[in-house]
Length: 322
Image (cartoon, rainbow, N blue to C red):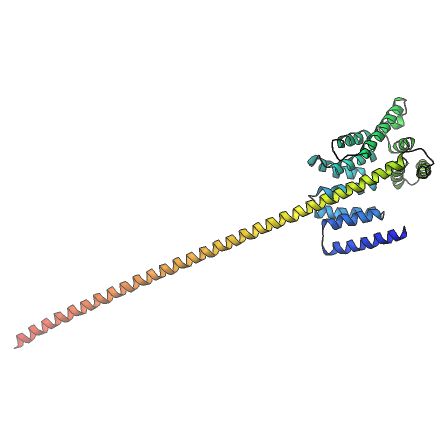
């Protein structure tokens, strides 16, 4: 066990370094999962909240964060994350499972049962979900029977009463989670301590095969289902991340092509404007040269006319003096 913990800590350090260099989604999810394996749920929450800020559009990050919040005993916070996800994607199996867990932790067993039943439409749903439905049906039925007998402590399933109900049905681990949540707020609750001690003892006996309960098998099935769901969530997140990268690359290529086209259009426009200006300049120069030649010709003609006139006058004067 110690060797495994050391290996997990090494993996945590490795992924923290990777995140320090590159903020990739798979690094966030892997690091959060490692923190969960190391039972450091607060660090897992911190990593996933940072991932949620960096990738706010990815539902897989919200679902992973909701799972950690459920484990931390914050089902209301988890529910606020999950309900919008399911409203946008009703086929998100993992989000539906996590939401059912949130409802159950909040004591709303009927809503949890309703959510689990909605999952049955998925083809991938196996016996584990059906087992959860059967378990919740027994819990709801037991609560209603106690309420019908006049046991008002079970009206609305207050938290301590819910823990007792779990105990009666043989779900000791769930009872311990609820009691631990109460003790974190009210450490002096003596009744809670007694219930927890009894639940822990019953759980240990069940694990050793000394108590008749289906919980160990259910725990294994639930763990396997969670691991499978986590893997599916990881793969889905990677697909979404890859799709985002491809979309950004496509948009960047389109933007660069548009910029190149605009640059070529500008250059062509500038070339045409330059050619037109040069053409106008040449035409202006030709007009001015033509006008200059015409003025020079007019001056030459005038001078020639004046000279001819002067010649005739001189000849007339010469003839007169003779």
